[in-house]
Image (tube, rainbow, N blue to C red):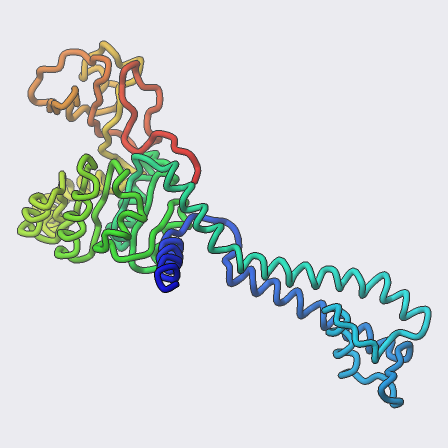
Length: 371
């Protein structure tokens, strides 16, 4: 029995960790609304009975029906207990019971029964939803940490066309996860250093993982666990200092962003050249001004030269052909071929969708089933 209880506890913990985006009322607000409806029905019935108290008889005493008697009659009537010590004795009050109080009794019972059923089945329904979600999810993007870096990463992903249904946010703060789910993504509440929490987030099936922990030691430990669970996933991690960046690379991170040194470099450039600093800051702000993006070539661009694209507004920085990244200054790309992707500077806009034949889709933009 103890083992069975532990099994149920583990299932309940897993269900409580996974939070789906929803427009429905929260469980607490839903329960509060139903309680308010039930109380309102009791109060309304009590006032109705007390208003017509002369049409009721209390067979237990001869001094009439008081307000307390009306409240008592309403509760035992609505709950179908019906002791029979107070009863309507006139045609008017009996008709009122038939056409008003009886429908209110049905509504009262529906509210009570539905609330009870929901409480009893909520855990089972949530567990079933988690299982369906886990079976359908594949190649998702997982963001570990939802502080300033994690929130910026999510905004950038969504601004570049990522489907929010393919993104999972992991954070220890339940309020941070709630904020993430308001943006349409799935959240998992828990410490990402715990392997089970990462499994709950679907890390073994993920194709991309962003490690945006607040502390470098936490980021290193999370990266180690993520790499052990998802050997083929692309891991991008953030580090405060370059010394931690080396450890993150050794732990399995494919790319490491050292935000403290990057911020210092940007500040020094802004001092040496305000225009250079302003341009770099503009490039890093997603969704406005200029932006740096990697995109597939379009049908119209197939067979054309990079210089032709530049004349039309996109400044080509590099061409990605297979596993090779060929920069613009190498000059070995004469024309675009099927399957090429290009890294460009362009005015912020919606990502291109008219890809040439044979060109792989942009990361994070493939449609996924709704959980």
